[in-house]
Amino acid sequence: MNISAKPVMKPEDFRLIKEFIAETFGLVLDEAKENYLALKLLPRIEELRLSTFAEYYSYLKFSPHSAEEHLKFISLITNNETYFFREEAQLKVFAETILPALKERKLKAGNRTIKIVSAGCSSGEEVYTLAMLILESGSFLWDWDVKIIGIDVDPQTIEKAKAGVYSGRAFQSTAVYYKERYFSKSEHGLQVRDILRKLTSFTQGNLLCFDRTLAEQDIDIIFCRNVMIYFNDDTIKRIVESFERILAKDGFLFLGHSESLSRISPHYLPLRFTGTIVYRLKERNG
Ligand SMILES: C[S@@+](CC[C@H](N)C(=O)[O-])C[C@H]1O[C@@H](n2cnc3c(N)ncnc32)[C@H](O)[C@@H]1O
Image 1 (cartoon, rainbow, N blue to C red):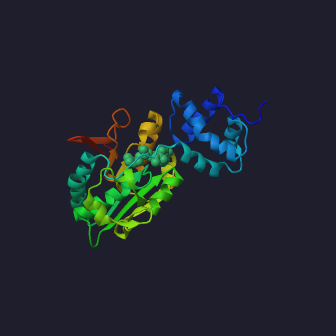
Image 2: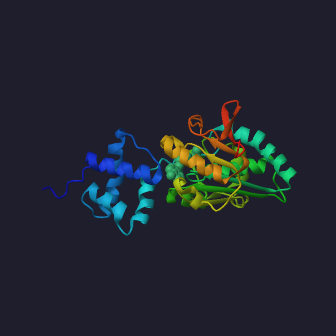
């Protein structure tokens, strides 16, 4: 036996790990991802001094360190692509239509709080973008309490979001105005200013047990963009149902441009705008 040979992922290993990923995180890997998964997991297997993918699977599932390993594992396999001001048409609707409607509704109810969740926030660019748009709207200053909460299953992205230091592609769609106004120069890039930090917070959590991750209720808007493309319909239904439980009456849901609720839930009304759809939660008994 060649002791220096690298472990090889057998079809059975792939099947088991794939099932584990779907059950635990909702993510669906297609068959073509076998080599990709093997490459991602090899360094971890070497670090743990294991010899086969089957041993790694047992470690993930049954070792006393499995909870810790889940977090390392998920950081290896997630797609964290994101950047500031992603999907401009949608953000325009958020800033110019949804925020004013929300303000009017809140003022009528004598309630000056706004709660927004970015579910699958990756390294935080979406959360800080929403904070900038809210500040620019000038609508929720002074005695308003604004909270934008970012949640992601990948602990490394949450650390990055909390650090709030960005460079390069993160700014591919960001106007100079925003960079100058909301960021300051730091050793490793541009750092978000305190004015954004005051409105934002980040938590590591799994959307499959969203109710346990998030203590807040009556969320006004949930952004869950470019996350559910990796889930199957059953998982999407489960997550969308958990959104229903935490959304405020008439709360809004923003999905990514290639995501839709059409086959998923009758409980949201699609509001159609140029270039985008926003979903509004229907009356619970309606
Ligand atoms: C492609 S990024 C999208 C980031 C951002 N929403 C955007 O549109 O730019 C998808 C994010 O979803 C997260 N994610 C995947 N499965 C998740 C789960 N079960 N619970 C929470 N976050 C998850 C990934 O870690 C990743 O950071």
